[in-house]
Image (cartoon, rainbow, N blue to C red; front, side, top):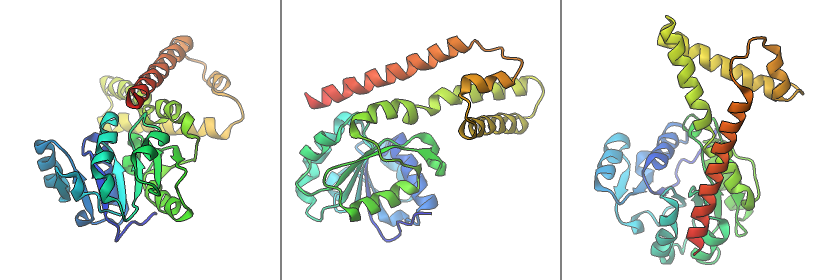
Length: 266
């Protein structure tokens, strides 16, 4: 397991993503609450994060700028403003990890002083338990040392294959948004199990084990999913309708990402 003990980590944005990252850092990274500084503009959210995790919280971006790792977990269109606000406080050349969907590396590097290494990743929700699949794009200023540090951080979250920055919006639609395609199916299966008389624990176990086994089958067998499903005689779902539904959802996610990227660049 990756170890980030002794490093100060500054998070800009303590919403759902920021709080999930704090949770994971404290649970699996050897990080103490005193080593995390969370910058959040909303007072009520600051109070919640302070009470829940015991980390340092602030409304002043400068308080988090001096950390060894800076994580951008704020809404995407806020990120350029944040970088402009803290740019003159980054003389120590921290590693910047951007989790701001749709903000490309070129824009991030242009907003940062020369020599600041930046990587782009959009963690998905299974990262909370170290089971994320989080493609990462490395900026042009990332040295071997900076990459090793980034990989230590990302290793806490799960798997992080390197991909081209130009593919990040697509990967975000597939992987960062991906759990939202699967979780409603879990919800439906669990509810059906409970309605049929199972305990919630038994229904959850059945759904989880079936999903895990299905994923392992797709990973281990040479046949594509459209052939693997033929091993089950009863198939009540309309396959074409499911493909269309998920395909439209992914296309919509990409469209939204592209729109935010264009807005950020304008």
